[in-house]
Image 1 (cartoon, helix red, strand yellow):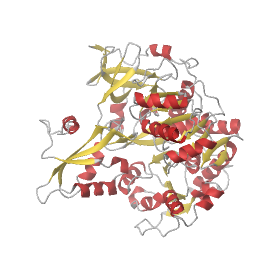
Image 2: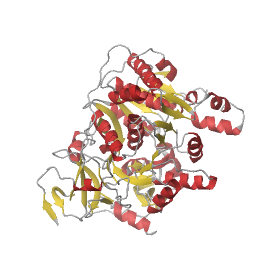
Image 3: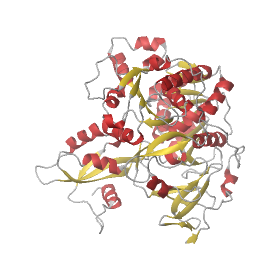
Image 4: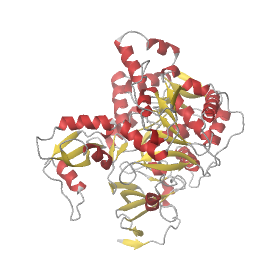
Length: 579
């Protein structure tokens, strides 16, 4: 039974009774910007290790120096307050430095997956209009060939190997297959770039040249808390990816909320593993801001590799590990096989996909610590709810709202009607971590952000008698695979361009261990027939690997409503049933 809401009235937050001891119901948020956050950490933890990359360590003091030098280099390239600076980087020290250097000038960081195809990058660059891009050398060719109308003027090429210890750099030069394979995975190497038609004014310079521009000694704009800090692309509720605008205040707030949620953390003494990509909202907040705000040692991995993780764990044991369920499963299994203890890991928080109870049991048995599930979206910076780190948690739910966070459960057809306790409805979230809107998308912003600051998540949930939230379904049609969001529309647009495809619908099918597989139902054109393998090869050329369908189902017709809309749920149910 739905009841008429009195509007965005402040709830009494009854869920705070479940907070772990030491978690405040009322939280005083830090003032200022992310520049102030970084400055504070450099002052407080100067000699402590901030970053570790394949064993090479960078102190907070040296990190602060590098950020200032990179900021000076960006200013020399013409970056000013409000300009967008695109990052196309895996996890590496240069990523951290570039991120905070751009913010120091009052610029706006735009994060990109370096594995995106030319087509995917073009859409985003056309949207945000960055004139400067800092790019992994393996992705430079893709960025160089972006057409002139995207406005990109300068590319800073970043090599990962120079950030590694000397002995490893030497080992990577050995003329043996293993070294060659490892080197190829990390760098484009010395090669002649493939010829591309690029604007004459577009230049490519090396990362070391950016750092050689001097120090940022002159006065420069310092961003305000309300200024835009990051544009993070998300599939949102429907359609093509949109740029979620996150302010300095949004990201500062979520880092502070995360710190408060784990009262057992020891500032300046934790080791956080960055196995999540920092171009993803989850990895960005947990690693780029939260970890550095508490003076943690952040151990960086350019991609998740269980061997690299366990090797690093022997020398710098993790104490806090944010990840997704498959990562926990693989680390626990490999550590058990090799007799490696994981008992240093006291806290782990899982997100982006459902957390199976079997994963929780195996991980907590291996570590002796807690593994809890959180909930959020890019638009909430990203964490809005979480299970408490303690006995009051409820596995199978996504927990209760973070400090200073309010929720409502409403009728998705009329958001003024609140659902009765226990009934399913759409989740609305309000709090200091809720984003400022979508970049250049006023209509979508108006639809997503309601009066009073309430954000429509598009998720159907229920709230039990103890105020714990369980996600039941999604209004939106996003597919969540490996912790990443995939827009079916985007994949369909690509597949429909392949010869022999008359109609196509893309859905997500559940995996046994959680998450979904991308699957395409395709109606072939009349003629010689459709080549499914050729279709998948075409998809791999135009989409990031995680967006490529795992399989293609050839069907005679797609079911449609009376107004012609494809009945995606019906297709999904049919494929799940194996028909």
